[in-house]
Length: 579
Image (cartoon, rainbow, N blue to C red):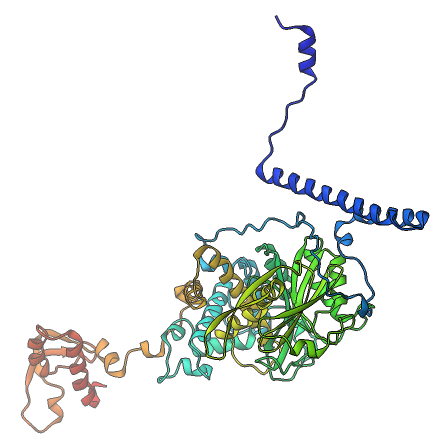
């Protein structure tokens, strides 16, 4: 019998709940973060204790302890005056990077068993295509044949085909010389031109400016921004850059960027990760009321708003990068790495003679707090501003030498990271213009609308590549094109003009020989002065006796019936009486 004391002692115990591996890792990371906070607070208290003014040092340490305990990210990004060049030092030290415990695990869904069309429907579902069909029918005349979502899916598939097999004029896909059966079997020329004219993705707005494309695409852009971020979990690296949608027509928001391959067009701010478009904004001109930080910093903070306080690393080009942007992002829990211009406010003053003295693969660095500026010499000097890694971390890059050979060149890790992760938006533009859909139009918004639709295709291709390995974009577009074309019902396929019977065949379809008991003179020979011939065969349509049918009846046994009918039709046409 159990001891009462022991039973009471056992009753006070609680059963420990088993933890999953993810929960154990999260607890371990939280414990490490707490230990780091305690160590940082201890260092601050010891540093302040060395100050001669004990009362002042005590108050300062309390303030610093409150900051470090309340917000780990803000403690790791100390503020500094933007125009103080003397605070930069060549004495480098490692930095303490906060753990990315707030960032979700990078687990992508496996799409190995998902079709290409199903992936596209993640961004262009059937309900959205039905809205497109409704807006298109509203913009079209009342007497036209109403379109459907299935027809618009096939319409998109034909545009994918035209992006792969491109001809300079739309009508050339139906003419005799360059006829493309893939297109002509799905749409007649007139029907396709009608869809091009009346295709709409939003309800037509009467008050919209004629040369402003934003009212025509704003609703679709909002929905795509939600779906793009919903179906993909980005890796730790984010890239912010601008993309150009080529357009040379008249528009109030058209921009000119001479450094781009397509210099004229619409500028779009893009945030991407691993060649996947996460978020975008169409640039509509200078902002009316930017904050004190400036429009550039406002744009970067607005584009990365969904990823704040998660310790992502943002890669930018020299247009965005500045010490002020790095400090603003650090307060939001985002690290920065990007090429920077030497004349940015707050940059260290490095003599040009020291930079020219560097050989290829050599570099020099200046550090202030957690911020480091690296000047790396390649064919020319590259300046990189970063705070996502320690300046002592090195790496290598494969570069071309003067003899056209690839060699391994030493560099800081930040330079290597910038080369590998900062070009995602440029890759998206390359994928788009390799097989750009859409046709030329005088209106200002179709080119922008087709860019949005093609971004859906490119993001679907990225999801497809997760489960199918290294699949080329051309293979994916070809597979998706066939699946889109199959959405059109067979009864909506056009009746080919060439499918109708030729005049000779049309006569042969009605004029054929039959045998009768009554023998009469040949109707054809009766109009000639030669000797008449009597026959028992007559034409089923003309009900006239023809003597040649007696000879053709022998040929019927060995020659195809069509040849017989064609021959009979010629004889029938010779006689005006036979009509």
